[in-house]
Amino acid sequence: MQVDGNALAGILEDGFGLDLTGSRGRCAGCSGIAVLATAVVVVTPMGTVARCAACEHVLITVVTGGGRTWIGLPGLSAIEVSAIEV
Image 1 (cartoon, rainbow, N blue to C red):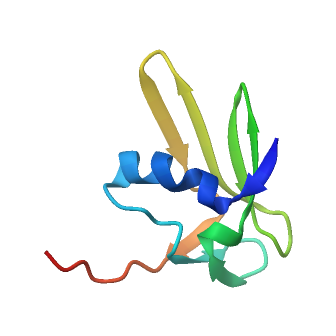
Image 2: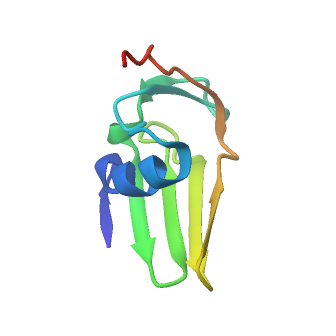
C-alpha cells in the first residue's frame, strides 16, 4: 500500500518522542529539502519504506517484530527539528 509521509507520524513519535512528519529533511540522494509528510511511503508486512518524492531515494526504513522496532534513516542527511515549548 502506498501512502504519504503522514503514515510515519505514530512510528516516529513512538521512537523519537515527537511527530517529525512536519519537519523538513534533506535527502542524501538529491539534496532536496522537503517536509517528511510529503515522502512516498510503502507499507508492507515486511516493513515500511519512505522515499524522497523528488528522486525516490530511500529516506526512512521501519521494521517491527518480536516486540521491537528498528528505524533506519539511511537517506536523510539532516532533519530540522523546531524548538519544543514545555
